[in-house]
Amino acid sequence: MIYLDNAATSFPKPTAVADAVYKSTLCFANPGRGGYSLSADAGKIIFKCRDKISQMFGCEPENVIFTKNCTESLNIAIKGLLKKGDHVIISSLEHNSVLRPLEKLRQNGQISYSVAYVDANDDELTLLNFKKLICPQTRLIVCTAVSNVFGTVLPIEKIAKLAKKAGIFFVVDAAQSAGTLKYNLRESGIDVLCMPGHKGLFGPVGTGIMILGGSVVPQSLIEGGTGSLSLEKSQPEILPDKFESGTLNLPGIAGISAGIDFIGHCGGESAIYEHEKELIKIFINDAKNISSLNVFDNMHSDKYSSLISVCFKNIHSEEICEALSSFNIAARGGYHCSNLAHTTYKTDKDGTVRISPGIFTTKKDMKCLSFCLNKIAKNKKLC
Image (cartoon, rainbow, N blue to C red; front, side, top):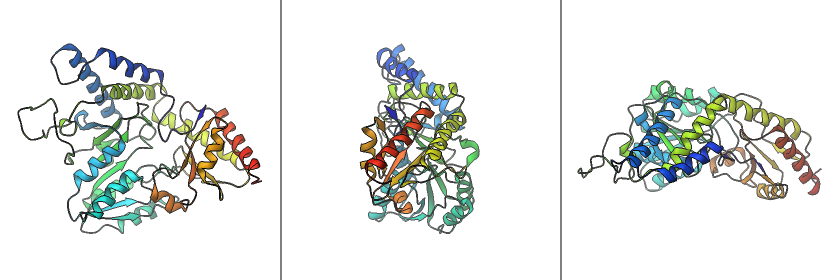
């Protein structure tokens, strides 16, 4: 199979990740819930992963919170920072994991939110669009770092400076950028960075991370046993315990730890990023010869990441993906859980085919994709 859906989850997982997951199910017990060696060793695995993440993203180890996915991380950050009457600003490319929690709060009369249009070719105009929406009630800006549909990279550092100057919290959705774009929370001005563990960090599915940048700490959404201060009725305020009630996903965390090591073996985030962008360049060059294929060309500037969307006019994207599947090519068609992005790009009728190569994708794979799309066009008499 040619797998081109790494924006959903990276595949295949590195062998070291699978080995770490398997070993964690055999040799370790519940971390932090016993004084015996199996429990202590499990705790060491978790601490080691937390430490690796803190070094990778420039934060303190205790500010690394393990969750079950990026959506949960975003929900904790959003709902834990907002109070009644607050106003929020989001971008026009947000995933539903940002839009839907805010819409629920709005429907309940808790908050209001505004959408800032992202100009893919002009960071300053994008920044101005955010700035114009700030009002006295604005408490939070939530922004994706990279569009999960079109690969647009937003000017996160500039938005962070804008938020800090205005005294506004800043939460970043790094679902499509963690592991390829570099962050340093001690320098960036990001208050909360949310990410999955199973995409760019190569961990297993069902893993997520929320990183606190400094003094801003949301309220917890879930309370319970933390293995600490057990005689207290109230949830501990110490980090990371405040947000990690119940048993942690030890196999998933062990896998993330091995995934971070794998990134280092590949030469770091920038090496992976450049490899994936080169593959997209190859595809774009070949796609010019495919009749009727609309390519949302994301290589005309450096403000784009290593994924791209395409479509054929008046053919639903899922139909195209079904045809690609017959060639044993896995890509994702549809709306990618992003109402705002498709509305912004006017692709909400038929959606798009999202192509997202990974570190294991080859130039030959991309050539094959172009060949098959061309064949689909001919079969459907689009030429």
